[in-house]
Amino acid sequence: MLSTRARTLPASSTAALDAHVKALLADGADIINLTGGELDFPTPEQAADGARRAIAEGRTRYTPVAGIGPLREAIAQRLATRWGCSYEANQIVTTNGAKQALAQIFTVLCEPGDEVILPAPYWVSFPHMIALAGAVPVVIDTADTGFKLTPEALRERITPKTRVLLLNSPSNPTGVVYDRSELRALTAVAVEQDLVIVSDEIYGDLVHEGATFTSAASLGPDVAERTVTIGGFSKTYAMTGWRIGFAAAPAAVAAALSAVQGHTSSAPSSISQYAALAALTGDTDTELARRAAELNVRRTLMTDGLADLPPLRLTGRPQGGFFAFVDVRGLYTRPDDDAGTVARDLLEHAGVAVMPGRDFAAPDHVRLSYAVGTEDISQALHRIGTYLKTINERSPS
Image 1 (cartoon, helix red, strand yellow):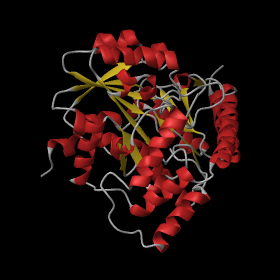
Image 2: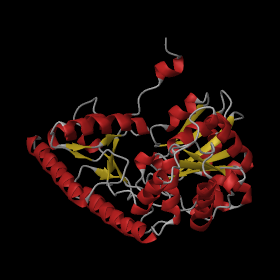
Image 3: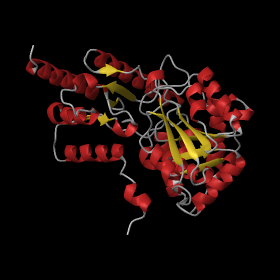
Image 4: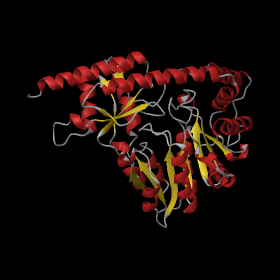
């Protein structure tokens, strides 16, 4: 009964594990959940007020497929002032979360059999989105180059079928941020080889002290004219449940994306669009700065704590986002061990839920979220430390 695509498509492992842990918590289990990809901050009051006003004023009808004009204009303005990108409102398509923008853009850009360059480790949904569009993910392992794709590795994997270069900076799950020179070198290859660049920049506002974010489309007209920038409100504004994302693209690509959306989901919720508009146009800078400072405190607490928990090995201090990526091979005791078995043991014996890296193409790593409060982070680190001490005491000397 099912199509081949449906039969071979796994459920999202991140969503499934997070849901499983939340179900255990609802049943009273004593678990600290470090699997999630959403901050515990509330939606800014300005955004909530915008939604309430929209309801009170009866703005509850269909909107244009690409979104209401004022929101598209505000997104274009923010991309210009914050990230140095030159997009017009007609180049913006609002979507039901950044995930939908990504899923639809591969349908717009790729013919069956086209290849999409995908650096690994990667976000779990990327290869499946590509495959659902009939394209082929060409995975390039970056473990030996600091989890960053190099121009040399990119060139080696380009074929006549290569159509798209997919970038994600700041990265989920690794937390790396490409600096301007690194990004310029990669985009130069894309321009030379006539590739389209899809740049997932959903974490672009969440860059920590010591790193600077660069948007690919800000690198000049030759890059911008072939770049699709993906962003949204889920991370910056802690609006995951509102489901508002966007794609900023060359006008012809934006028009095609809007056409696809018109035949599938249509526009995002009108109420969510007005909430997003209020978040962009309201006075949220002070609150966002406070949250950024708090997130940096959490990152420091998490990374410093992990440094004191050998044989866990933090693979680089995260520069953006809210994930720590940890090599757990030092905990292997059985031939078939991987990060999945380590994650299972931490859940069962330490009461800490972490995300195993198999579906990130990193089977020896786990991802720990520091999107939770400092008390939960401290308690999770304490529990992991106690568990590791128990293991060491059981080990023969």
